[in-house]
Length: 86
Image 1 (tube, one colour):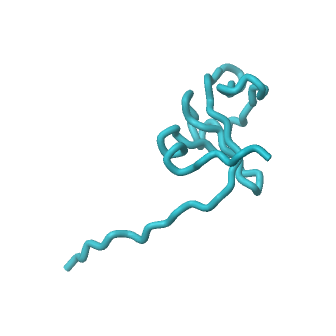
Image 2 (spheres, helix red, strand yellow):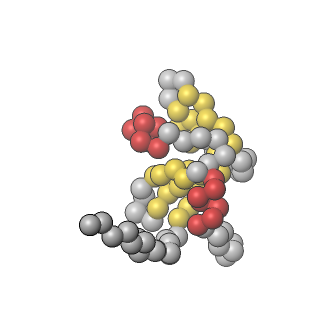
Image 3 (tube, helix red, strand yellow):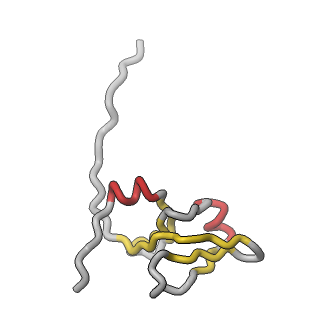
């Protein structure tokens, strides 16, 4: 007998740094260019590229411990709110 239960829900309380990706150049290295032109393009490692497979329109995300990640736009924008500049 199998009982179907809803899994426990969680709310994120993490603070992250993130930039929306404008474009991605994949040649000898992978370079992310951001919507905000004040930020220089970012070269990401092959391991990052393989693990996250980033897409334009999504977000390059860095956690407090330095871990670099990627989030699709919909998931990121539904889960995070920008903090006011200090």
